[in-house]
Length: 145
Image (cartoon, rainbow, N blue to C red; front, top):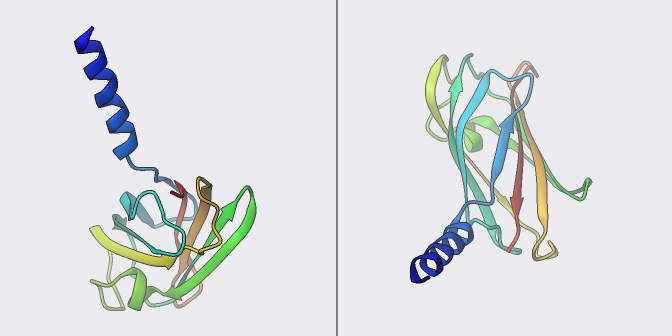
């Protein structure tokens, strides 16, 4: 009986400490994300949220912009945009020549203080280069504390 109780407690702790972030690559995409985490996880209303990860970059990135929209129940909650070279790819000055395996990326966005506690948010990140050609597409989902 003690072993079962211990296993239940350990399972509960593992679930509580586990990541709430899930993600998937979408198309078109020549910047295939292979890993991604967020901090803090779960997200906290009023605090910035940082996504970090790696991707296999298949083509040159010549500048351009990224955009991400976060949705609550299908309704747009917040949209953010930025410069690929100054935000998304901090370790690769533009032009960022491809192909590159395990290209590091980072993205920091604020989480509105009005975001409901306990909510599950969905989002989509896209990025285009300086010729307006999309090279990245990632959908994601995470929880708010």
